[in-house]
Length: 220
Ligand code: AP5
Image (tube, rainbow, N blue to C red):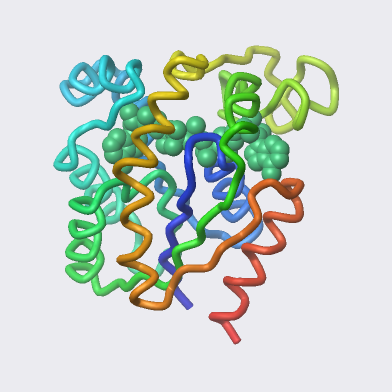
């Protein structure tokens, strides 16, 4: 069964962490607009050049750019691949665009999973975050350290990096953008009866279990 799900929540809610678990455990594919934009910035493409200053300020990149990226990425996948939208949609215009993108490809949205978190804890989560410079595995200074100090659990690399937008001032702007532009799209999906809430403050394994139970409910 092909699933199309959205993980929704403010910066640091755990969308990327959970999407990566679903890739490993359920064979789904994570479509993260944040990762796509960071790759474009790194490769210095025209989109990357345009997006860099906006991302560094914690503001939102244009709806046209991110929806274009999502459409291209979906086209590159097989039609039967289950996908997790991570960090997309983030505005009412993007939610509208996603409906069209999915319909044009014979897909439909199955679940919107809202990670419910306490905002005060998120600054701590984000400013403590780092990842493997080689394979991208995510870690945290306190909540998820590599099993062997300074060695990536997944690929063995000893190089790690931090995101330029993971400082407190930018995080506050990103949260304000979430409250103003992203949280208001929830009612669109609530009206369709496809929103489930998960306690994003629970330990990572527990959040993962709750999400997989929701997905299992569609299989049964
Ligand atoms: P993006 O990369 O999407 O960033 P974000 O939404 O701000 O989300 P984060 O990646 O910061 O958080 P997350 O929820 O994935 O948390 P994570 O799992 O890493 O976007 C970056 C920028 O790109 C935007 O600001 C914007 O400029 C642009 N952009 C992207 N998409 C866009 C769009 N659609 N439209 C316009 N612009 C767009 O977890 C955080 C930390 O907490 C980790 O260290 C993790 O180990 C830890 N952690 C996770 N879960 C738990 C837990 N349950 N308990 C304890 N620790 C936990």
